[in-house]
Structures are given as C-alpha cells and as structure tokens.
Image 1 (cartoon, helix red, strand yellow):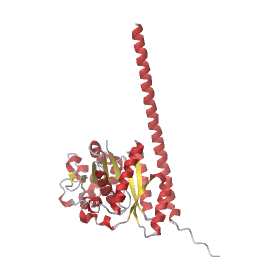
Image 2 (cartoon, chains in turn blue, cyan):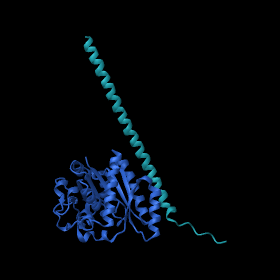
Image 3 (tube, helix red, strand yellow):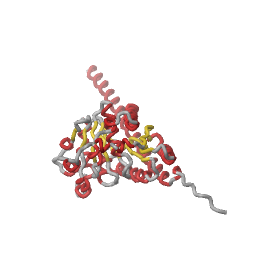
Image 4 (spheres, chains in turn blue, cyan):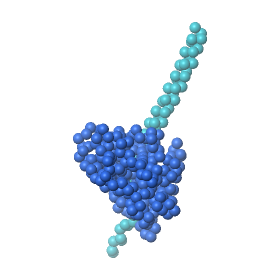
Length: 258
Length: 65
C-alpha cells in the first residue's frame, strides 16, 4: 500500500516543485514506483518535466471537476524517466469556482487518488502556494505533509498559516493526517542568516526536521531547461546527492515506523 | 539614558512562538489519536481472547454431551 505525501507551504519559491521532482526521481532510482501530481495552476512541475500545459489532453483540473475522468486517464509517463506525472494546466486556476457548489468538494482529490495507492509506492502532490480549496483537497487526500522551509525568516509566516490549515483539516476532514517532516531548503552557505534560520527551525520543530539540508545550487534552477530531474542531468552534483540523502532518510523513517 | 536596542534575532521572532503553540496542539492531537488507536488495538486483542475462550468452552460442553 503506497503513501500519499502533500508537499505544501504557504509561500512560493520554497522548493516544493523541486522537491517533488527530485525526491520522486531519487526514490525511483531506489526501486520505488512514484507518481507526482501537479496541483499548482502555475504548472511549474508540468513544465519542468517537458510537458506543455497547453497541449495536455487531460489534466488534474478535469480529474477534479469531471466525474467521468479518472486519475488513470490523466497519468503521463515521461519517456526518459521512470516516474509518472499527472499534469496541471491553467484551467486549474478555476477549480475554486468549479468546486465551490459541489458536495464533498474537499474530498474530490481523495476520491480519485486513493485507489492509486495500490499501484504506487509514493504519490507526491505539488501544492500551490495558497491556502484555498486545492490545498485543502491535497491535505484531505494525503497521509502526510512534507513542509519545505526556505532558510529565510519570511517563510515562518507561511508555515504558521499552513499549520493552522493542517489543524483544521485534521479536525474536519482527515484526522489521520501527519507531518512527514520539515525540510530546510535553499540554505545559502555564504550568509549567516541561513544558519540562524536553520537553527531556529531545528529548535522549533525538533524531531520533525529532516537531517538533510537542501542547499542553494544553480543546478536546481537549470532543471526546467533540461526538463528532467537533477539526478539525470547532474547526477554527481551536490544537489543530486542531497535529494538522494533525503530519499534514504525518508525510507529509513518508514522502516523505523513499521 | 538611551534605551537598548531591541533583540531582533531570528530565534526571538514572535511567529516562532505561534508555530510552537500550533505544533503542541498538533502533537496533543497526534498523541490522543495514537492512544485511541492503541485502545482500539487493545479492544481487538481482548475480543479475540474472549472469542477463543468461548470456543474452548463450547467445545468442552459438546464433548461432555
């Protein structure tokens, strides 16, 4: 039985998409079957994997609003990769209004995604940097939430809002939702500030913090140019190593819990 | 006397206190959910034990008849 992990943070540019792609690809390298679902109307994950959102036949938007479209019908497999993607498109921005009148709108994604837990070891949901119906759907469908925190003070406000939503979702829709862990991202070794923020994250979140730190590397920014995960275009880079370590940590965490 | 500079370090940000509060609420909920699951597990084990005992006595009664 697979695990659904929502990668969420109420702030853009914290490494949600980069984490979904590169952690997913690292887990694939370790023999796991992985599906990534792009739930962000900006479709950054879709574009980063070389899929044109304007040419997508079936997107996550149709899966959510059209009862006749199931998740399997929207899954794409990238020829160069061994993991699977459900793409997004700009229409997803209308999901709020499309879902607002529907009964059980918070569970729309859960209904479509839950059956796929039989087919994949890990399903990652790349959330938008908002706290609307899409994120609530992601948290309602997920077993756990992974929170990337950019090593900058402003990110703490996003975490606070996200934790409030997590608590609400637990109360109302998904009591079993857990926090998978907090991931320190974009750590800039050149600045003292990154170190201070990292220390504060450790003090505040304690055991929830992954030991692996994702540092700021230009190689990550090159991802959308290559349209593949970092372990394909820069396999020996520090960034690729960091995501491999994170994947190992996630698997060790699972083994310890089992 | 000039007032001293306020402490503006990252670790002293108010938002971190809010996060700790939210996390402890979360942790409490996780703990109680865990306890509930453990209780449910205990209940299941007790039911299984009693069912086994009933089976044993039924068998004994049948043998005596």
